[in-house]
Length: 411
Image 1 (tube, rainbow, N blue to C red):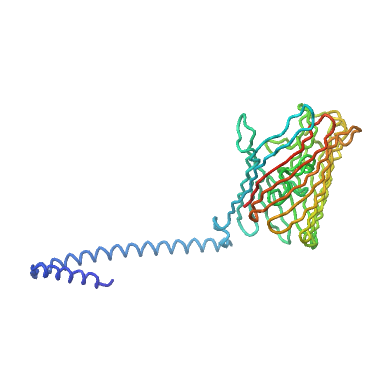
Image 2: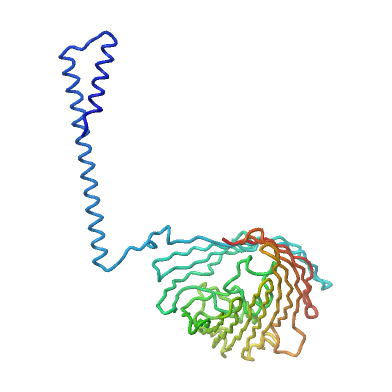
């Protein structure tokens, strides 16, 4: 250790005493030197202790690295928690100003923060990851409130090589255009389209296992074994949407089998078809099983500023369900939606949709609706929406016409 700082301090002390007219005696000088030497010895001891601790830490780290390497494990950069975890989300608020054309019906004049969703994803390694999605609907949940908390996704996915992957947990069913991708900045219109709400029925998640991957250039598949829908006969339920159990102590007596093929080999084009079969939509609650087969197909195409979406979905259900509602053995719908994106800010669309949850009967039970409107992207993932809807409903049913406004975002 260098003694120069202490020698300088000693000389400075002597100079100061001299300047004050009190020249130290040899005995005083010796006492000062002894005092400085004692301080030096203390500092040397502290430095030695610090060096020992550093050496111990280095040895421990090296020993840990040796044990990790001997176990055949490599500490990749993605193993660090901060770099391996992603937080995101999306949210949307709607204003509905709709007039009910049914003489004794109620108008809809409402503002609602429809949903706020948080993503939390974590990558354990280059091949294994966890994905989750937690949603709050209608702003506030609890007894007497309209809202609810929902866990929409929570699964582990693992790449098995060759472009193939498997996952297990709670995940979105691979069907339709909106069910897996429904952030508000990714579609036109304030509200999600009626066909994918009432027939598909989005948002639709189940618990189970699935496999997915590419089987040829531009051709991919999904195959899933999951929990199924569970209609409640005591409540007289028969609409498909009412059967979503949301994996909340769900009855697993009758699972569902889902398969999808999708083609994306041309830039800007997606063509897909999904089949799902379930042996009993009432999960054994009735003496007779009521099976159901869903077929869905769609196309999404974008070429320059022009976009087009079209979708058909239909359920073929055992006729025994007609005991709850005539014609419920066929529940189907379709829509077509052209759009035009002027630039990165502005886009307009028109949509015609038709859906019927009692299409198997002879009565007029079908709904149809026209929607026209525009989106304005304030930023790439922040969108303002305005549209006008005109609905044609069966006799005696609510028929809502008017304006919808919305703001949405994702990050």
